[in-house]
Image (cartoon, rainbow, N blue to C red; front, side, top):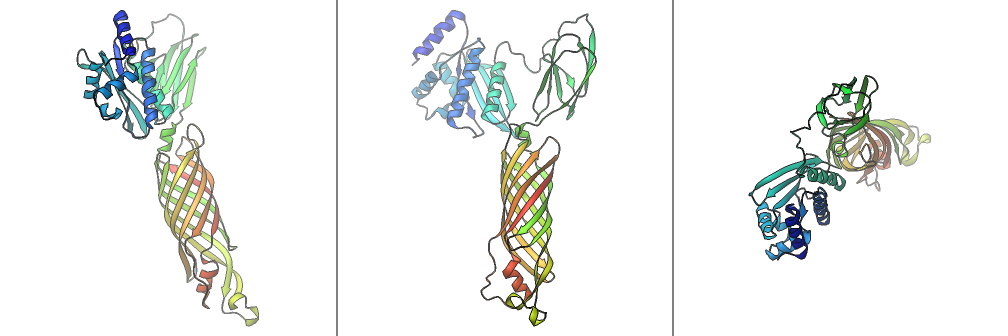
Length: 423
């Protein structure tokens, strides 16, 4: 049954000849959105289509009632375009809007099809690509709604050039980092960077530079002489979070709870990112430590605890393991971030022929400065916590046993300076 709101829309359509459009629920193929978020985006798409003034939009409640009358199992059951066509005919709409959100790499694309029920053919199809947050999707929804307007100009048909003027012109040279960005002047695509342009003097020009994976740069210029603009493009948050760090080093200062100290280097191989989740596939550590030494061969009057002589000695510390973690962006672009992670692996201390090793957990927290270049740096704290320590109730009289019991697997605190290189 057609509701009162739709009857009013049909009456208005007959009066001003604007087609009635049924905007069906957005299908979230990414699984990222909560059900209420998808509903809100659907309502927002309907509002933006109505704002254009070219269409009358069927109220969402009438669409839900029609689906229920058709005995569909759920609201999601009418995502199929064939179902939407039948419901659109039931509502006496002239057009239907079928919308889907899909994930392409580390970005999300909103695809929209405007289907004309009167001629049984697609009237228009458009898409917009951006980030996957709700704010990014709102921007993509606005873009596709604008393209659905009858007056919208497609990307393959740029607006006509402005009429020539007899006034003076100046040269504008545009470069960008990275190169190959699209240059749009006053709504017209004019080439890619580096570009040399000739523009009218003494009137404003809107210059926009666009590159996949980077935030658009836009500036209004009024040239009074020949000029050059060098633009450093900034990565989008989605692109920044999706980069993989294939090699990294961390300089670490070490202090054990047993009184030893030292320094070393961590090496990271294949630090992969899946959105905010990060996984260092392989990490290793090598460092040198200085701590107490014990010798069974010494004069009796110099014996220390357990009959050994005390001194100091250097030890080699080694670790090999893996590390999953999570990254929390501190700013909109994700340039500054905190990474919390938990490593696990084998940690060993050696002195000559004496060696002690244990399976060890290694929690860490790091601040990372992830710029637009291939270089990342920061600062952090790391712990080395042995899961099992030797049973020393019946320690023997060898140096190796004493080493293992007293300080062979100590809990360790490290201050590190991470350095990394992205692809």
